[in-house]
Image (cartoon, rainbow, N blue to C red; front, side, top):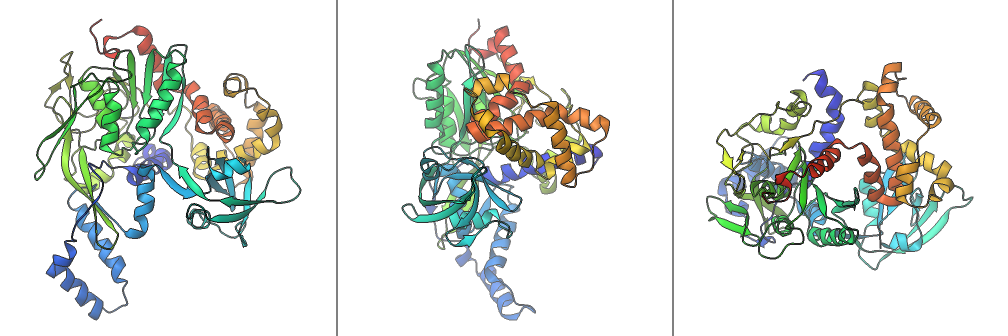
Length: 540
C-alpha cells in the first residue's frame, strides 16, 4: 500500500470495524431450525477423529465455530455464525436496548471515565455526571489495575432490578462519592442528532436501522416541524444498515403511496416487493440524503429508493455496496446463523451489491478506495456495472454493482492531515485532553446559556492549543513540525470543542460543532438554495 493508505489507516480500521460489527438486514425474527451440523456425517466424523486422535489438546467448540465461519465465508462476505455467548450483544444494537446502569464510558489512563449518563437511565437519575471517574464497583477496585471494556460490561450490566454499588471520584470533590444504582432497561438510540440548520432546513442523523429507529425519527421530525421545517437533510453517512422493515418504514415517509421501495429475490425466495403504503410525513418538500463509503445495506435501500424516484438529491461519496439480505436462524445450542437468502433491488431494478468473487479484494475494498484517490477526486470512482438503469421520473441513468453513486460528489477533507495528527488520533489524545480541559473549565462552560451559544460563541484559544501540543508531547508523541502544527490546528481545535460539547450536550453537541465545517452539509444547503428539481420530487 502507498503512503496515502498509511496516513488514513486509523480511520480505515475504525470504519471497517464499525461496518463489520453492525451491518445486516433481517427479513423477520429468527426462526428455529434443526441444525444441519448434526446431519452432516462427514463433518461430525471429522471432528470426532480430531478430538480423539490429534497430537495436541484442542478446544472442540472453538474448532467447530472457526470451521463454521470459514465455511460460511466461502459462500459470501455477510453470512455469519454467531456463538450463543455473543448473540445477545449482537442483537442489542438492533433491538434498541440493554439492561444496565446507563452510562457511556471511555477508559482513560486505566480509569473508567463517564462520557455521559444516558437520558432516562438509572445513573442519570441519581446524578452521575460526565467526567466522573468510577473507582470501585461493589468491592472491586477498577482504577489502575488494567480494567478493560469487557470487564466493565460484566460488572455494570445485569438484570433489571438488581443493584450495584459504585464509588466515584469527581474532580473538585475531596472524597469519593458512593452511589447504589438499581439497574434498568437502557435504550440504545439510533437517531444521534437533529436540529435546524437554518430557519427552514432541518437535519436528522440516523446511525443505524434498529427496531426503534422509525419512532425516534418521528420524534425528531415532529420537533423540527414545530420549528418550521420546510426542507430536510437526512444524514446516513457511516450508517451500516440494520432491519429491512425499518428502512421501508423510513422510506415510506418520503414516497407517495404505492411507490415501490425495494424488492428482494433469491434462488429459494420468490420476488417480494415492498411499497409505500401510507401517507408519509414528508412526501413534499426539498430532501437531501447524505451518504458515504460507510453507508451500507438498509442505508442504501433508503437512498436508492429516494434516488430512483427522483424524490431528493443524494450527496456525498459512493456507498459501501451491500445488496445481500440475511435471514436469521436460531440453532439448537442458542447460537445463530445469519444466512444470505436473497438480493435486494432498488425500484429501477439495480442490485447495488459489489462483486465478492475475490474475497480478499472484497475485504480490502475500502482500503483501495482510500489508496486510489476515489474519495478525494470527483470522477475517480469506477462504474462496476456498465448497464444503465433509469430513474422513474426524470429518466436519468443510474448504475448498480458497486453501491449507490451520489448525484453530487463531496470529497473527503484531507487538508488538515499530517503524520503528527495520525499519531495523536491513534493514541486517543484529543479525547483525553478534552476531559482534562472540561475538568479545569467546567464552571465557565456549564454557565453558557445553551448549545447554540456555545457553538457560535465559544472558541478554543491559541493558548489552549499550545497546552494541547505540550500534553501530547508529554504522552510520547513526537513534537510536530511547524508545518504539521499549522496544518492540523483547525481540525484539532474543532474536535476539542466538539468533544467538550459532547460531554455536556451528548451527540447533539458534538454534531452541532463539527458540522460548522462539514462540506457535505454545506453542499446540501447550497442545493436547497438553488431549488433543483431533484429535491422536491416534482418537475418545477
